[in-house]
Image (cartoon, rainbow, N blue to C red; front, side):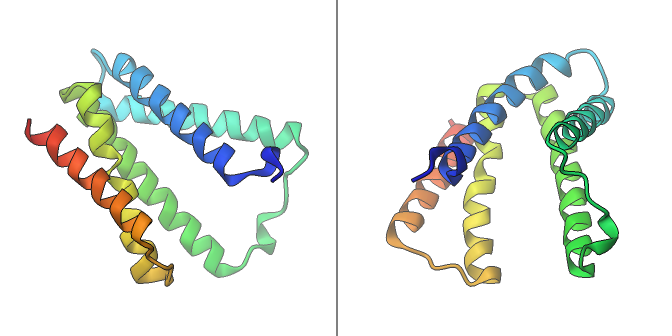
Length: 143
């Protein structure tokens, strides 16, 4: 397995940076409007992504993208924005040690949606792991 191109490496990187997002987000929303905090975060993401595209010389004409890609990318952007707005408000109202794990219910929801809408196969390990995530979120939320 080529580690540099491994989905697992990028998934672990995503988890690590998501943890930092929770920590820095909690500190960042202290004393300011959570929607403004989300807006600032979005601008930073835009600039960082533009910088990466420039450094890697990966800019391309978006006119060549299929219409379905545009529709789903726009829907994904809307979903991301709504998720961030909810996340930052939750961080403002609750402890990061409880908000972040509840947010990870998205993993279990993604498993269900992948099976139902994309026809992905549900294995025992995937079902048990997803169930444990749900169980963990319930324990964190209730106790």
